[in-house]
Each structure stands twice: as C-alpha cells, then as structure tokens.
Length: 143
Figure 1 (tube, rainbow, N blue to C red):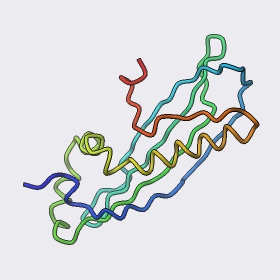
Figure 2 (tube, rainbow, N blue to C red):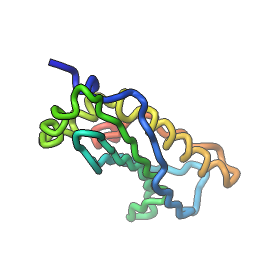
Figure 3 (cartoon, rainbow, N blue to C red):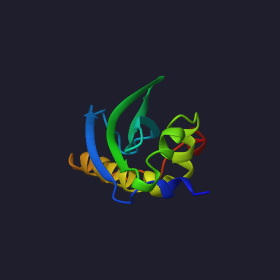
C-alpha cells in the first residue's frame, strides 16, 4: 500500500489565478481574520489540480468584510505507474481531507507564495507588511 503522495510527481506547477483587493480604512492596529479554502478542480488519471484561496477579512463596526483575496492553483502530475489507480482515488469523498493531511507536499509552496504576495500587496501602501501563516488555516486555528 502506498502513501497518498507516492502517486504524484514532485514537480508541482503553481499558478496565480486571481487577486482581489479593496483598501479598507486601515488603522494602526488592524485586526483581521484569515480564511482558507481548497477546491479540487480536476482529479483524473493524469493530474490533480487544487485551487487554494486565502481571504483576509476585517471587522468594521458590526460587519465583517473581505478586503484581500488571493487564489492560486497547484497542478500535480500522476506518476505513470499509478495512472489507473488515481481514478479510483478521485472518487473518494475525502480527497480534500487527504490533501490537507499531506499539506506539506500538496500546499506548502502554494500557500507560502500566497502569503508572500499578501505581504507585498499590503506593504505597497507604505504600511508594515502583514505576514500571514504559510500553513493552511482551518476554522479551528482561528479560535
């Protein structure tokens, strides 16, 4: 039996897909939350494509508003030895859980790049850069 990551080549291709920024009225101490999501865009006998989105939200009075959202895709090729096996895996209901369990392999470089881009966007307005964690932030992490 193989580990889930053994089915994929290590040469991931990561592409920035979108950046959405609405400049909030920044205060000196801006409190914001981080919300991460993944979506499986493609899972077949040749590739696995994962969309990762990080959204920063801030509280304004009694309202919570997103002010920065960055999305990127990570594309993994299936090793030739396993191209029939992955079709069965793509039908498993917990494919997202398998990816999150192996976050270091599947999401590490994508999340790090998104985190760096967020810092660059926010610091480009003359503010101290905000560093978001280079790890997947689940709802449990925010509490």
